[in-house]
Image (cartoon, rainbow, N blue to C red; front, side):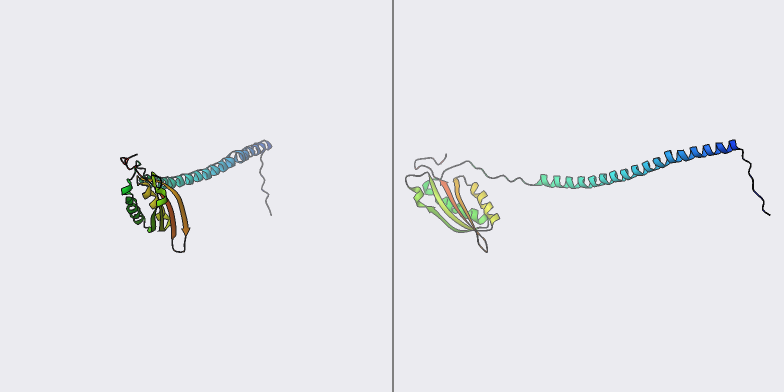
Amino acid sequence: MKKKFNLDIPSKSLTYILICGGIIILVVLLGIIPLNRYNAKRSQEIKTIQNQIDEQKGLGQAYQFIKNTSNKKETHVLPNPAKTKLSRQDAEKFQNAFRVEAGRSNLMTISLMPDTKSLDGGSQKLLYNATVKGEFANFRKLLVGLGALPYVDQIEEINLTQSSDSMECKLKIWIALANETGSGKK
């Protein structure tokens, strides 16, 4: 035979139990679960921010390295000497100086000829036609070296021609000459 299990719970107590159970379920659904989700979301945001902080620390070290190396670089200052003039007797000094600068720049001097037409009429300038051969980067060094010569008045024309083995550079360079009675200074 089966015995029936019978609980005699008064209906008033059952109502209280249901009301208290409902309140507990509401507290769990409206309080604890949203708070748990909020905390999980905040934890994810904290991890993201921490990763960004770590990345910035690494970039900060790279920035310091770049800043230190850029401060150590030498500044390239182009020469700008006070302009002077060569006497007509010393005009061949330019030829020697040009060959020295071309040698320093690892360029081969093909030709360096004065233009005698530029001396007509007591001109204050002498034109040289120069041709050098070598690498383009070395040509830049030659131009800087020519800029350091105080009697180079101007470079009128530059003609670059690329060949299979090197570059040929033709220049027209004006040299300032002093009056025959002048002191040689401008």
